[in-house]
Image 1 (cartoon, rainbow, N blue to C red):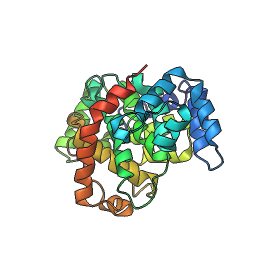
Image 2 (tube, rainbow, N blue to C red):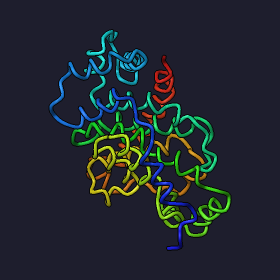
Image 3 (spheres, rainbow, N blue to C red):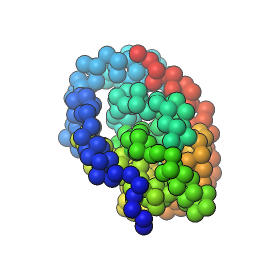
Length: 285
């Protein structure tokens, strides 16, 4: 492997020295990573944030979450959505402004990465109806953040480096993240994992971000879930030239989750139908 054209040490230092997330969000993530949390603790953590409360109630009352009777309390909303979806909503509300930015280095227009992240999180909600086992709560947040590393790595990509990445994809036949490894000696999943770790997020979320393209290397579990969700999200939304050549979901991941080819098509259709409404609900507040 050739020497990386970017300053890796500087890039990693930046990833490890980010501004912290709001304490309430970090606390919620850490709380839900274990088994000892109570509904009262979750409700209290959310209730002090008016914007998050408004989004949570709007989401709980959306058709995508099969709302029938109107949900009026945070407690009922948490019960309706489930712990994983609530945590991903809290995280998304925190990082939305960053994910909404244009990232021309990745061929992403304004809002593209945000829509892809929401589609990935929504894919997990749809996956939960087909998977053979309960999905880890960390899967939702890892799905929202799985491409967060692109925001930081893009700042270090000049025209020459972008040309090298394009050549690795076009002539080398490499998928986006493998082209990053070949040219940069680091990929956006690894960098995103460093960012998540610097925020104090639980190890399972960090792991899901790092290995969302290579779930076998990550040992499966949450990595399988986020990997499949990412693939579904790419099917739902074309996220530019850097997503071209993205592989189909790993057969091992599909098998681990009990997902068939027919299920996969259902997931794509479901997420496609629900995405616009969910994006509108996220915009509440």
